[in-house]
Length: 396
Ligand code: NAD
Image (cartoon, protein in one colour):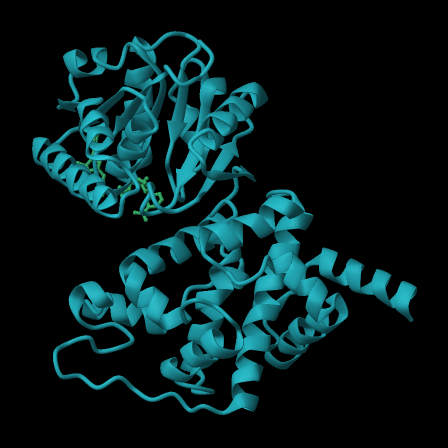
């Protein structure tokens, strides 16, 4: 059963991501089966999808008829018993988007596998678990592939397609072509911690936190520098407050642990304290900034020389991460740059940015930090060293 326009798409888990994926598939004309262990989650998903589609009608991106038809294509299934799984039998693709729990994800895909056709594709939307581990409970692990959407799934253009060592490359290619058909930008990522975006973006947060911890500059000044000088849409601290410090800290921890405690990914104590205090960001009214009524926004120190130092330091470490990901074949060069511009709105792809700065200048900045701190956190990628050597040979 090749994936196509008439494929019925199953989605397990109707939270933020599952509801978004179901909405996307339904607006693209697919019949959708959306299930959740908790009936209340399905009701929330149904109301959320109706409201999101209503907004698209208001913006004239959909007609009222198209919105109604899309909603009618979604079948809601409450519960996780045998009878509920049987409702997925006609699905050519089932994507699990349940909570980030390996044992539960394995159980879900194992149960789904028993009812779908032998050539149906099984996808996981995991952000931090290994696709190979999730596939472990399946009789045909070769048909399990990572299909990692970004939040909100109907809006964010990027989708990381993750082929594990267990995945049949034909399944990976099929999943990619299918999601491409939903007008998404897909990139191919290796089954390594954080895939592309959540791995390469770490210094954007981590180094900003480090600079603030050392009191080289405060949050408002770092955010100002990254926005106004660096060209990023949001500064690191406003972005962490927007994402939620609990979520951002959990991603950092999971990449750090997944990388066997490589100091390059070490989380910040300052962020941990915020999480412990319940200062999760906008959603709790307090994070790095105070969002409560009447609170004054802190003024940045608009010092161009300091701003440039901040941007140079963070961008050099981001480029080093991208080069290292290329070195370790997490993805190819084009996909690495596409992932950062399409997934997290970076002003430029990091490899292209590195070329613009010059690999020798990037290496100099990273190596100077390693020298100053004596910390492996600032270890330059072997490929960055190699490229800089090459540039020296050619350019003198
Ligand atoms: P969520 O908590 O909003 O939703 C998870 C849903 O799964 C809940 O409604 C819950 O009732 C349901 N559920 C739990 N166990 C279940 C089971 N055994 N069977 C059926 N349903 C079950 O979580 P989310 O933010 O939508 O994240 C879902 C997945 O997507 C996670 O793996 C997460 O890592 C990943 N992800 C999240 C984001 C994000 O920004 N939120 C982005 C990309 C990927």
